[in-house]
Image (cartoon, rainbow, N blue to C red):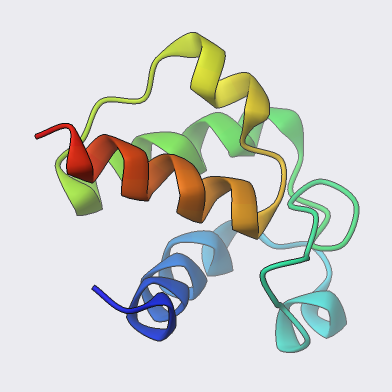
Length: 84
């Protein structure tokens, strides 16, 4: 899966939880899920569950704590996919 394909999937996953539409429109790998997109911490758990379902992976608590930016989410997804 290319980075562009993964970004498209992540955009679809996070869109329902975003509170900052302007930040979402400018979403890049550098975007912070909490600060830039204003996804609250409760919804961040929903995002992680949706990522698990979409990519058929399990994200452990240690990885969840690190998943604060789009890039970190992509890195964790790639790591989990490579472990399968």
